[in-house]
Length: 242
Image (cartoon, one colour):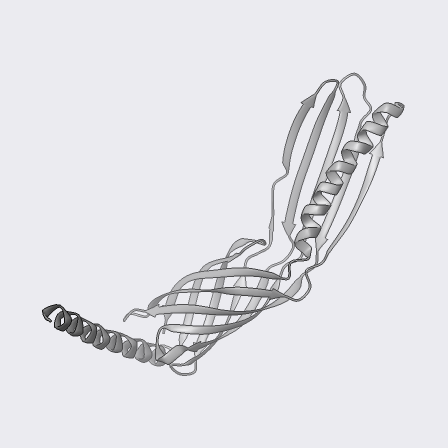
């Protein structure tokens, strides 16, 4: 019986504390409706990038905002050397995100708590990927080359989500939100060319077999992804409300 009273008192005290905390969050969202912040936007396949954002709370329940995501990025050339008897294989790989992206969102705070439902419309950047391979015989100046160029067009997406925003008395806040992403158009375009600079039929046949294997492998990997119209994201941010 004593344990029952103890847990009952603990539950009531916790409820009163939660109620007081929720009321404080309501007050802060109402008194400090404008928020500016920065954070990290992580999308399961595309990128892990920094963003800047601003939002405005009409009242304790409704908030709108926009994020600018610094997704423009180009990787360094990734070059691998694969020595083999009588040949040297060189494989290069490079990718780039060709523009920054944006998203706008609406938050609805649940039961006047720090938790909220989120609805987002956003864009994903155009992505370009290039693969090239060279076969260089060690006993001649001839070489063979293949280039595979793949582009994923910029596209829009819609995302529902669930988030949490905790505001301190001085206006500093921390937020995390995430959910699925439904991508409107996730198709890839690819082209390739072979360059065979050899008088040896054997070398040309071997080069074609190797190049076709590389191309089919990359095409299977990347075109397989293009059929995925659902991804997931998480935003983690910190800022100040005033």
